[in-house]
Structures are given as structure tokens and as C-alpha cells.
Image (cartoon, rainbow, N blue to C red; front, side):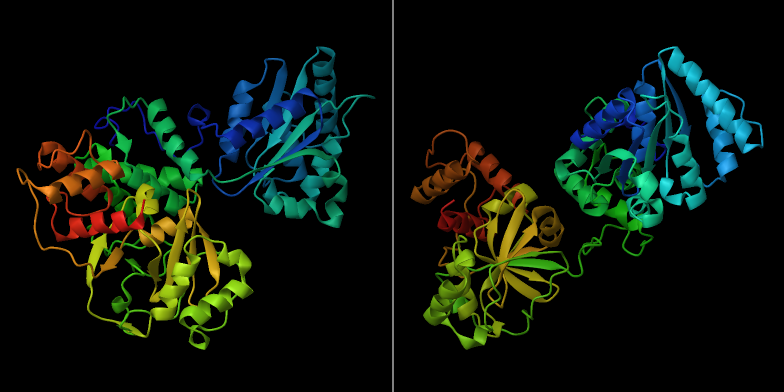
Length: 513
């Protein structure tokens, strides 16, 4: 439907497995190498497992397409068969007589075929998909097929492909004989975030994209947050997002299109008009990140209506021990107590600052202005911290953000580590910075001059948002730098240094980064 609009030759995200679209991530390359090695070396049984939608069937088809002409192959996609029906299907796929109803006749026919193949210097491989659905009787029949061999080599190489429960089935005592014969095993994991981005680009190129259609970085992150790297889910949401973009006459697939696509896939049409407030499955509540400078103790008055005991809806890893409740110690005493009890946590940057913030936060907060930001994920590390991350009415203090993880300190003073891909969907929708800076209320725009303009230019240059040397004149170059800064941190992009933009610049300056 949208192919012509995007100048594509075909749908890049069709759910039907197609070897042409196979994206060979590193693990897929390794899996195919395992398979090719097992077949060439006549190893007998090879096992490939993976969650639903991770590309197992597509890998099988790709393998068959890449096999040497000297390798005869049979692919069974529907293993919900009786042992007789399985033998009939195998023989028919090998191109030999499979109409008999006698098991002995079918086995004799298959054996004669395998011997002839071996004599010609050829090989034979049987690939069975969705093996977790096989009955014990059929699995036993497959084991018997592995007995078709010469004195030195296996006549038939068998590749078993299935979901993780297949491994559980084979580990049972009753399956010991077939499990012991499996010499090569490989598990396909979901794609990483980087692989997901490359996967989307790969499929667009294969479908004929010329570069004028693309998913924005935010769109890719949203797709990954929804799909968790499972190709089938990636295809589903990417296809729907392209349809949404087509219906809105947009060549670029944005975060908004992906959010709408996810809602529709989940059957939630109530907010299908792109209203704010969309929540991914991993989010149990809206997220607000409020950055608190420890140099402003007056900030912390009356927080009871905003901050509640922390609740996290993602899997986390504890660093250090859980400390006594906040009420037991405060200020310097709390810091000394923690330093003694959790040396591993104490070594984490900004941990002391986080404890000082926690020690000063009473039960409520009133007064300071709030700066609403929606930073791009790649700029999360530039946000000054320690900062308070509010999740579902609870809160933590963000102390560290790396490429792969973030670290936060909880109210119990324990340090928790979250994968960055888990944290991004939580923080990106609503991030707020609290400030009580003694800032001037001036607004700076084109043609303004003076030392304050020079200071702004120097800071923009330091942060990488300005080209050239500061001239103390607010020119077009300065306005472009301000616009870039505003865009990356989710402020209104107007090229004017108003109160919010000046607050952000000052906070970045104070962070020392």
C-alpha cells in the first residue's frame, strides 16, 4: 500500500520469512557457520534454539539457499505429524517415493537414497523447524534416522530447530539418547539496539530504498523498546509505522508514528491521535527527572505531595548493600555511615553528592521553578547529575549514565544499575530539571552584544554547539548553535536564549562537562 509512496520495490517488513531479507547480525553469521560446519563434517545432530520471532526459520531458508549443489536437502516446517507422516514428508522433500504407508518401506527407500548420495560424494541434510511441537514418538523416529550411517560417517545430517523449551524437552531422562547425540548447539538471542538500527536500514535497502526514507533515532529507540530486538516484532511495528507515516504524507518515520503503531498493535485506539502520555509495556507510570544542584539546599522544602517511596518496573542490579532507612542518619553522619558500610558503592562517582541530596530532602518540595526537558537519548549523559528520577510516584537519584547502563541511588541508599535500553523508555517522555539559580530575566536574540553574549558563545563552543570564535555579537551562527542545543534537549527551538535556555546552559556549565 505504501511501497509506491516511499519508492520501494516491495514491502521491507513483510512478516513472511524471506532469505533475501535476512540480516546477518554477528550471531546469525555464527549460527550459519555452525550449521555449515556440522553439515560439511557430517556431525549428525545440530540444535538451533531461539525465542519466537528471532529469525530461526529465515536462517533455515538462508542455509538451504547457500548449500552446495552437492548437498541434498529436505525442510520440514510442520512437525505436527505422526512418525509415518514425517517419513513420507521427508522422502517427498528429497524427491523420492513418499507415498508408501509402510514404515519399513519408507525407511528402506530413504536408506537407498542416502547410500546413492554418499557414493556420488554428496551429502544430505534434514532440517526440522518448530521441533518443540514434536511428540516423543516422532522424536524417537528422528533418533532412529541418525542410525543410517556407514562405518565411519553419518549418511544424514539432522538440524533440529525450535524454541527454548525444545532444550528442556531434550534434557529429560527419556530423551537422553537423542540429547547425547547432539554435537553442536547454538541459541539465537534477540538483536541488540545497534543491530536493530542496522536491521531496519538493511531491510529498507533490500526493498529498494534510496535514502529518502528513514527511521529517526528516536523512532528506532521506540521500536527497540517495544520489540526488545525480536525481528518479528520489529517488522510488525516498523510496517505499521510506515503506514502511519504514509497516511500522514511523511517520508520520515518519526517517534510519533512508531508510538501510534505500537498503540494500534496493542489494540489501544483510545489515544491513537498521538496525545502525550503513551506508555510502553515496560513503563508502569510516567517518568519525571528532576535535577537538583546540591549547592542549593533551599530547594528541599515540602516534597510529600510529589515524591513517594520508590517503585521500579524494570529489572535492576544492586551495587553495594541496602543501607539503614534515611531517617536513622542524616547529613555528615549519613555520609560517614555509608562510607563505612558500602565501600563498593562509595567508589561510584557522585555517590556522596547523592547521599547529601537524600539527607537534605524532607517530605515535600515547594517554590523552585521547574524546567521541562525531553532530551535525545544520546544526550542523557550530558544532563547534569546527581538528579532525581521519579518513576510511578517513587524516586531515585541518578548518579551515573554510561553507554550501556545508568546507576541510581535509592531512598534506602542502595545503588542500583539499570540497562540503558531499559531506562530510556522511562526517562524520555517527561524529564524535568528543578532550578533556583540567581539568573537574570533577560532575553538574548539576534544582534544583541556585550559580555553576556560572549559568555554564552564561549559555553556553546565548549559544549560543541558553536562553530568559530566568540565575537560577543549574537549572530546567525550563534542562533543556529542555540537551536541545536534546544532541539537536543527538547526545548522550544526558536534560537533565542530565554529563561529556560539560559537555565539549561547554566546547569551544563555548573556540571563541569
